[in-house]
Length: 402
Ligand code: FES
Ligand SMILES: [Fe+2]
Image 1 (cartoon, rainbow, N blue to C red):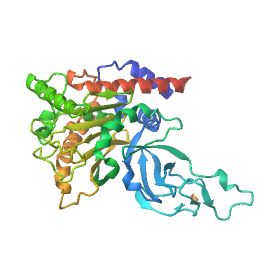
Image 2 (tube, protein in one colour):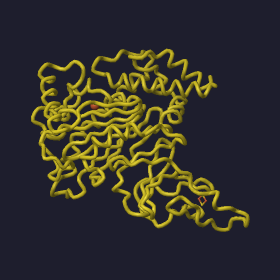
Image 3 (cartoon, rainbow, N blue to C red):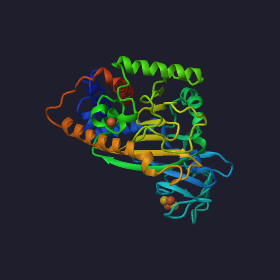
Image 4 (cartoon, helix red, strand yellow):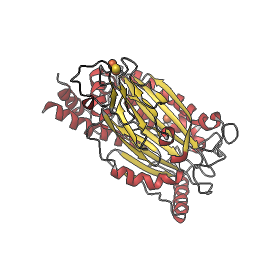
């Protein structure tokens, strides 16, 4: 069956408020559709601007099977390009950070300037016009120090997201932050199972003993009177400091400030700060957390002392990479102001626990006995994720059958 028709037919069988049909979590054709229809159109966090501050510094990455990079030009602009040589398509730089005055393809040494222009292509015919073979650009946006890219030729509008996030995020001074640690974890589960898990805390109280110490795992619709009173007192205190607590959201993003558990100042082993030099200039001890989440695949928490960025990278129908990045103030010194262990331990435990949950989820979903099941009232963000996926996939599928 044509993939567009197949997706539409399966979505028709997947009512809102329920998990999706089995094929959405395992079928290789739907996985390929997801890459094109969902990932190639979205905005993705790839790193922070401070990592590519000097001319010639670059950061190369892969989104699904697509390789791309951002590079700082001599004019100070950060540009993005597909990481595919215009000669025979070789990847130009390996994933990760680097620095180079020119971008030289390792295969036959075609050489590009930092702005993507082709400077040299040895032994081409005399009528070869190098002006036609510059690197193919991708869109780049720098938001309060965070670098986002889109591979789409006509990316989703970034303006509303920027308007909502920038003022809330600027106090964290991420433009001056540094990456303290990065980790990647492979999960044998479809990317949607990883994301559905990441969009709810229905499972958190039982499964995340470390996270629940400081993080409000009962934050949701069915909160206790005590939790509600705590959240209201927090919101009132934030208002008195001029800090917005009202959530904001758009079609593919959501931002919210939340209260940590009573008395907690950070997400850590005991809720105490784990970095002596704070990201945020304010000395207010209980500033809570600022959470911003993007469809299809990421969320971030900015705390007074560090920020945590989580992204899900689809590798195959039942294989996903979980990328985690921890940011601290650029002047925070490892071993003096923080240790990698102290800033990472809570989220690392949580990631490993979530891996087990997602892999187990995949095994059950693959079973002949799987039927789409109903979400709880605690899973409202999973419902939003599902609704967003349904409408985005449906529109893309419809466009394919036209
Ligand atoms: S593929 Fe890049 S120079 Fe040949
Ligand atoms: Fe979890």
